[in-house]
Length: 531
Picture 1 (cartoon, rainbow, N blue to C red):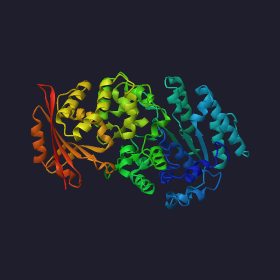
Picture 2: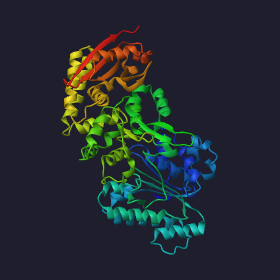
Picture 3: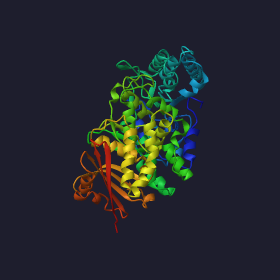
Picture 4: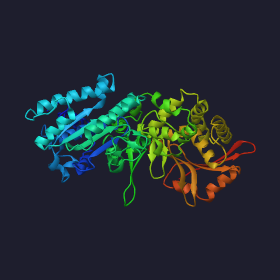
């Protein structure tokens, strides 16, 4: 056993020893299926703190012939698979973390030279009986080993994309790095499985990828690996039950990553949670922001303030809870090449700041935790109107609870003036203003737009979460250049309140109209006491 060749299973054992361990070993069944096939090249990209390195540790512990790891896996989900014993500890494993080598060197050339030197050292020690043709050539040495032993390698590359993140503008270095990976892995018989993990998908130059043999699994297209990208809803429910935490709050804080697997029988959608955040919330018994503690809001700020036509409008709409349609096809899979706002938004999907719905091709801000990161970033930018609207939303919500129609109308007027970048010409833009004006309502409510009701759809509903049932539910109907009275009448006529029939608390019916001549909002509120 070595550091990089057949490393010890201590990394995976540490995960098993942790107070919270969520079993993701069924991933091994997926990798077992492609061992030694044309599909043996997998590149899995997902945001930081989403368990990438733990997956690499698990793969190394399972496949490595350096030690018997059956005690680690026998009680886990993979042990029920037919392929379990067949592949357990049957391969020589090379596992490298590219970030480690990049951090120890000062250039890409130096990084690759060190990587090859260290691997050659361990291969020479472990395969003394092999007659190596050239002990300075890593690829030739691997060929020699395979020729004499007929044993293929499982090659695991963690943080494969670190060079693209730290040498963002050095295209020469990037090309050399991709060329090295291609020469090392492509069309090599000694590769039984190549599994790379990072944040970014594989970099594209022009219309081609230098590593086109890889099947990519990413936040925009997770494929069959979707259940292994984070914690599933069922897994989080189990943790909430064990740690006596409110699941509805956990969902509000950490859910929202929509990962869709496309199958012939129909799409399967997974509600995915940030593992880091969920684990911290359970152990600390407190819902808060944890995922973004490892990186400041400056990283997000650098992208959302870029001078891209329509980018600011898109961010504001998403803050208001809207989904924004994008085209992910032009993204170059790097952190510097942006032709349109869609390229910026696609990068934010891969970084975890947005979630992508591949069925309707839209992006949204996933949850409360990430939304707070946008607020932190915007608070230091020149988006004063947006920030003022968010800050005023607490007072506006209190005015709503107090049935103060004039204050509510005035507050929405102010929000409209402050968010002047939005084209204000229909009920959709009015709805966006309302949702941003009531931003603070998310502290207490699940906000649902277009909620199905008895005879139609309610424009906006505020449904109190279980920890806040002392707050009234709210049904809002919006009108454009008509009347607030007409909006209120429509709520009653279409029995919008029936959508909340299981809710036992008080209910506020709210009609809001925008008079485009007077350029003012009007509001009527009616309280319904449920028994």
